[in-house]
Image (cartoon, rainbow, N blue to C red; front, top):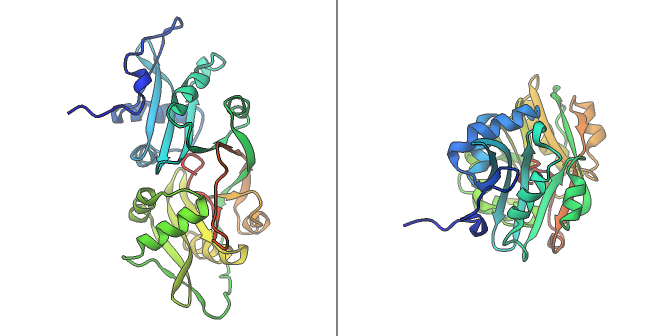
Length: 298
């Protein structure tokens, strides 16, 4: 039985006057899309692409049989989505190919809250498509330094995530990110070098993961009730990775930037966080997302 396409409007698409054809992305396209990201000096390894594409609905743009652009979306439940890895090869930029990809990606998402992180070059396009700025992400990276552990109040502790804690971590992530992503969290748990839980009297209040990504390792997501407990989680994982390249993408008002620089993780970029549709909702008193998974999936 043929699977239903996530992009029905493209099923009978033909090339436009400029010879560009949009079509759904397949696994066979991964080497070509990874090459596009490498052309822009983005750090994504082939494995990074495979991991995010496992949950994605992607598009590619072809001309003369060559892939010249790509874009991805991730649907989280019925009401939420993220978008990212929007790439047009430099030789073809300025021809509205990115606009066509984004318009196709937004098809069927009118009732969804859609989140993305925009480069300076892409922000104008996303604003024209109805996205509004809600903040920034601060990308910090470098060789992690040996990090003093952060003390916690009585009754609070850090411990390794247990084998049967996935559901609790799903809930923490959903409340902090504002959208349900259980399949993503499950995959991250399976791939992570370490996952540490913030525990208060036997109840999970936060967590953080250390995993391979790009030029070395990434810390994220980081979910915690406040900046001090977020620092405790990050310090634990950064200490485990001391002497190695480490990246973390934090919310702009997290209060962590100066401290991260003190442990060797310097700010290198600040993409804009944008949303289209209903603002993300967070339960009162919920822990917050201090560091995202990646700029693509949020």
